[in-house]
Image: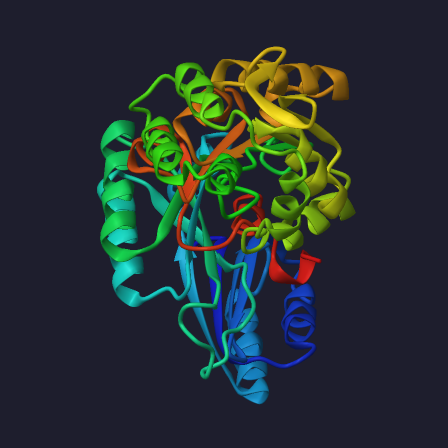
Length: 403
């Protein structure tokens, strides 16, 4: 029999189980080469890869462990591992590891089957599966719950483009978000999160709200929709929309600011980021007046947006200074990273429109949030099924870590 054994234990979990088994093994001078444990609904699954000393009494060890397992009311099985198989396992060290995150209101067997089938087709192997969200009550409404599981994968995809397209198709077909990330040191070491404001931090486009107050709502909304979908140049469409607001009284801004609806999960996300020392920023093609209102409300560190121009309390239909467009957002992200003394790999960008794509591609983690199809397909990651706090799950946060 090989001097390397795999011990697999399963059954009802209880405190001290690992200690009892380890104590039995310790009597034989066993070295633990690897181990892993998971508990689902009070049922434990424990695996231990063991190396026995050359002079170990293997038969006695097996008998004692099996007898102790019987006393504990659990099942135990031993499997021999050859030296070649162990050497092959060791050789996998240092190879790329990926994290696959699944987010939905509820996760079904069908969703998991399609995702895991594609993982297998691409030559990747699932090593660990972890639930990041809390336990779901049976009477919880399907449209308010949050479910997230994280899969750790080993291997190298055979076709990155095909894998990405397959995950996009699965996401669209089964109403689930699938995020596939290379697991690097930066994944859990992000320090700066930059947000678009309109339709990202808030559930509306401020310029559309201003347009309704000015009586030109339909005209401006149509231009906004086409600009966000990437059908129009942002700067040209921005100037065109702003010109339609000429003559609007400055007094209406305060009322609009107070009525701005925060996006689902925004407060939870910002509160948690602040608690863990992240810096946050609004990089918006909208307006400073409203960005600063959201900054005060949520406690965001930086705001960069466009400055409205007034004369005698009336909008001139012009903008002061440089327009914050997609190129400017990416530039601001780089400048903030430099100011904070961090690498671009440690930054996160979140946005919904075509003008957010430059900063999404610049950031270490770019996330298209409830975005138009063009933006979802162009960004590396997207969240459409959950609220803004879904960003935390892509960083590996568990519910018990979230404020």
